Amino acid sequence: MSYWQEKIKIGNLIVPRFIGGPLDGITDSPFRKLVRHYSKDELLYGEMRHVSCVANDKGAKRALDFEQMERPFNYQVSANKIEFIQQACEKIMAAKVDCLDLNIGCPAKNVIKSGCGSALMADLPRLASLLAEFRKHLSIPFTVKIRAGFKEKNALDVARLIQDCGADAIAIHPRLQTQKFNGVPDYQLAGEVKKIITIPVLLSGGIVNWATAKRAYETTGVDGFLIGRGMWSKPWKLLELQEHAAGRVFKVTEEEILACSLAHLDNMLAYYGPHGLYAFRKHLPFYLKGKLSASALRGVLVTSSSVDQVKEGLRSFFSSEVIE
Ligand SMILES: Cc1cc2nc3c(=O)[nH]c(=O)nc-3n(C[C@H](O)[C@H](O)[C@H](O)COP(=O)(O)O)c2cc1C
Image (cartoon, rainbow, N blue to C red):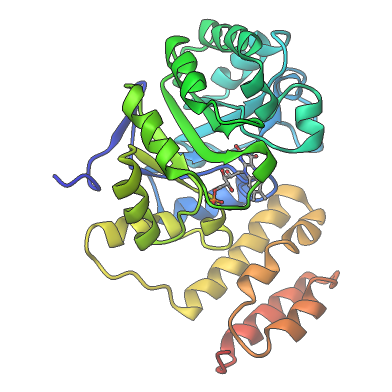
């Protein structure tokens, strides 16, 4: 069996190497359901929620609202103190989530200000106590998503600590907090992390197609790949990668993209209610690409308050011929 056909073992979870990564505001339940249409077994991350929100079931949508069809599901949390971790773990396990991920890579100002996210990479004693608390209360696989470091690269020390605390896998997005999502990800560092630990290492950053996936593997030797922005409005991306890895051709037709965009909108309306239309606006520009009519139509549809107008706009876009 080739490397690409082999699966990876994260605790007791056995999943394909291509994984749906976390994108706050994008990889929500409506999107994950769309991915499941193409990919049945792939692990899908959710969006980050603070453990206190999970423990108290807070938020506009209940933190643990998801459907069983989204499994295998890796629920992602942030934390800055021990409080709430036990309660959050119990609720997450009771909801039949398959895996829990602690995000210590988030670069957002409001997140690091409270000592969550990538700020934890600069506070190893606190990180160690949080990791121990999660491990103590979790009987499902436990993963941690890291960066290259906070202001300075220390991913090797952090990876060793995470492994010693009993985590089942590490995902690394090898950029510093200061780089946010820009600049070249340091694949060499990801490869070094892979060399010094024995639990699976997953790579996040810049994997958008088969060529970039292949290069990421050849440069780092990691075990799995988190696909982030490459999946935005392309819920078939994991299947596309799997097919290319098996040496097969994969193409999506215009009809399929249209059907997908309409299903996405319907999923969002079903999940968020009427607000789903406004939440769908951030996805529209990604579907409306590659044709001369795109920018004019985008301008109309991202301000429309009519579901029918948006659906009709999408239909007319995909039936127009001219490619830019
Ligand atoms: C809009 C956006 C939202 C993100 N939200 C999260 C998140 O909630 N949790 C997380 O661990 N990473 C988050 N990330 C980081 C991605 O998971 C990923 O590590 C990063 O974008 C690099 O991978 P990519 O090049 O495949 O997108 C986010 C990135 C973007 C652009």
